[in-house]
Length: 277
Ligand code: C2E
Ligand code: CA
Ligand code: CA
Ligand code: CA
Image (tube, rainbow, N blue to C red; front, top):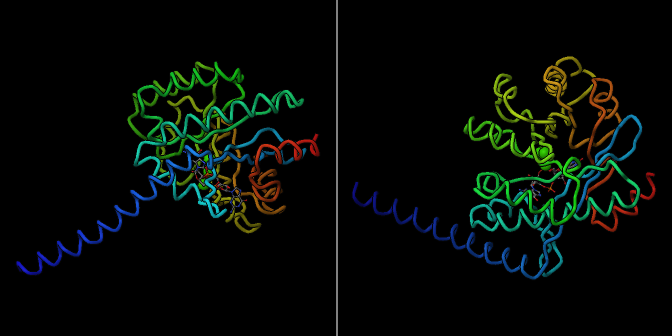
């Protein structure tokens, strides 16, 4: 038993060693990339599927490595959270997005909205609200055109603190969307207590929409929930016309996905918007 324990321990620590070393390497590489301005923000249009007009865009982070390849935010956001860099990085994304919003509105898209993803680590930070107010103030971004996306799991935590924070954010004029909706377990009674403006149907439920699933799909249930709670609903990951048609028919005219546009840099977004005026 002793030997087993020892080898078990050895095995464990060796694996941990590799894991941690890899993580530390990535942490350093990420920090360097941030300092060397190799991180950038891309924007994916959000569309009114009935008119095909853009109504806003979601800001998404990108990491370009030195050899020109792209690292997915799904891989490096957890590292940024683990190292604490997400606090600085998240503020930087918000400020970039606010500046971009001001530019787009000056191009003639007066009601254009910008959505920014917020990590739970940022959200729990004691200076989050001040950071948000300062970013709005310094960039001159109209608060009512800025939306923060929090995930459904974040929306379920610590009820009292969360209710208060969401109320304070709402008081700035900024709106809140619950991202990846349908993947968590938030209850109707809980949702009712939160200052939230819209639900974002997770791509998984958009993908599963078929003619035959009509009437029983999770997407339809979320659209119904939005109606009952008087919340807007937007679908992410819309990839084909059939999904767009069914969503619209079900009462969800807002969508985002490869069918309409992929995430693009600011310059590309400007020309894309130019063709959608
Ligand atoms: P998310 O917030 O759910 O973002 C949607 C993801 O789906 C994006 O992936 C987007 O590029 C992708 N997508 C959009 N339309 C389609 C489609 O039609 N089909 C498919 N297959 N995919 C589509 P991306 O950019 O790789 O981002 C992955 C995740 O990383 C995001 O998921 C978000 O959770 C996180 N993330 C990205 N940027 C930030 C950020 O600035 N801050 C934080 N905290 N998280 C971020
Ligand atoms: Ca999102
Ligand atoms: Ca999402
Ligand atoms: Ca998602």
